[in-house]
Image (cartoon, rainbow, N blue to C red):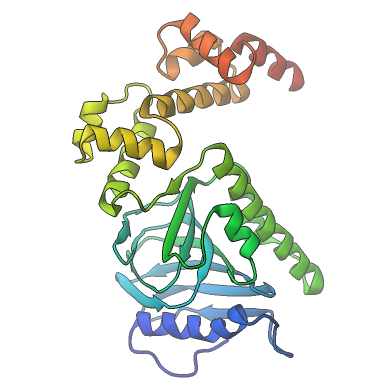
Length: 329
């Protein structure tokens, strides 16, 4: 589908694409003769890449973008009606804000569910980095049971939930971009995979709820997310709580309380959880002893590690490794 007028900025071009899709997204019935897919080629003056939107059923669409810009671009738009999207930032080099909330994500690997109503969004996309991005968009008026499941009210202005992209989510994203289905089979395949993707996200936030609560100041929310990212990089020797608070420029009490509210666990509990999960992966995937796995994830006391593993997963790490090895024979 081509844009009818010649936009002077990428922001204008982007908003024309959104406007061309809004009627279909917001309507409770799809107009007769409407195409199931809109395809856009990014004009050469801004970069290279494509943006594709699939209209799957009433109030549900899938968008896929893979773009590389020559220079940094900015996007701004007013969202004046309820809007809900699940965004997979597979490869991503951008920052975005919604009114007073700012997300400084400049790398991929995260999935975010965002609800907006009567707010202004602004995004800045970097140049010379491939942006591989996938979005599911739901019309909240037609998916109110989904809002209830997420604990979101139609009248609120903004909510955001975030998690790391799991291997299963990444596999679905790959299937959505490389399948060979056509016609109604294609339509059914895309719809089933997008709904499976949402189901995986819902399951992920049930097990480790990462809701961004607006009872915490947006600036503090960002600091707490930075603290979590530091912990993920330093699991073997994480900084002390006092040092971590200093590194992200927030006081220790705000970090403790905010971390528990956002991620459903304490800072110490998060480190322990991630260490044990890493050890479990090592025992599953590598020919490695239990004592070696214990040391790699930062536990010098093997007995302490074994007790924590047994308490978390219900079996000893040595028994788990043995069973995994037998299953692989």
